[in-house]
Image (cartoon, rainbow, N blue to C red; front, side):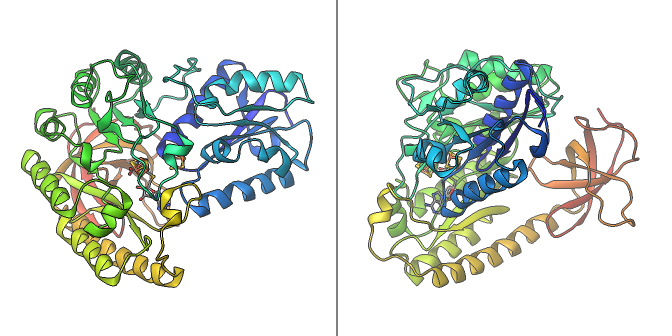
Length: 449
Ligand code: SAH
Ligand code: SF4
Ligand code: F3S
């Protein structure tokens, strides 16, 4: 174990990834250095409870930490994020090495708590209170230059979809002040970012809570798009019911806004959507897709889907398959419904046997594989731009040196570029030459910039 070192293990969504990056930066600013698990003095597990499996991963991560560190009491273990928010101080009983639990809003005070806990070895601290408004966090040390940056615009969610734990673990929706968001965007651009993704659980409801400063989501997009040096702008996750006409219009008006939208559908059945409390139906979703594609004809759509929601009949599931086909998603994340104690759907009758749900999931994923392959195939021959992110992972010795990046649609593209030079953060004009199973191959045309 080395003094003043840390190691963070992250599960869950992009917001958790972002929280972990912030925590790392804040600890570095306090003189800590990142280290492998076996050497670290401070180990933080940032957790997710959106489904049952992510929750199980936390317990196995804690088990692994105990094994690797030999249960050394000098190693400070912290649990942060959504499972910490839910289980709270129960972690102190579950695992003696755990001396810090920090929930969704509590994580902001975690760096100071870590310092205190290192000085007071018999102390345990829990940071579980929800704050009334978005508390700005201390500025950390900037991480390594990063061409792709994420900026939080809000915390929490007010939607209470009946299957979902997030409103309970992340609390009520709290928008950040637009000035603070723009400052973070400027700092990211100064640190080498060329692409920014705005983050939140329901981004297009930004500003529509008592903490809003009068700036709408569409206005925020326009303000960020104007920042000098920004090539690409994205956001996750919007809710179909909150996509207003001005959000659609942004796809026509802002060239920096990438032609890709992750728009969670969850189910294609109106009966199921109602029981999920999603507050749109399949016709409204299709109408939204048509308006989006009218604003940006090349828009690529992706989505989230749940199969086996309580009461989902074969006909309901067929409606989901039909909607997936009708929308032509380039990709989707799909999950078997998982009971979340505390969320309302856990009390609904008509639970679907897991074998039935699994079979539906496989059929849905087979359809998505076809649609995804079709989408990639249709890209062959197109000219596009890439933001280069890093060398492609080598597949055996035969692989020629190649770099990978993302096109404006978020697809992974490999290009042959000489090894031994750092192209990360460069933009390239390319021509797509071939579709692989999950990625594209391309040739560079002209100079990088
Ligand atoms: N705020 C985002 C993301 C929420 S969590 C949104 O509204 O889309 C990410 C995804 O996990 C959800 O879109 C949903 O598809 C899935 N999910 C959430 N709760 C779930 C549950 N109890 N069982 C299965 N999947 C779930
Ligand atoms: Fe969960 Fe629904 Fe909020 Fe998304 S919009 S975080 S699915 S409650
Ligand atoms: Fe998981 Fe919490 Fe994100 S439950 S998906 S880490 S908001």
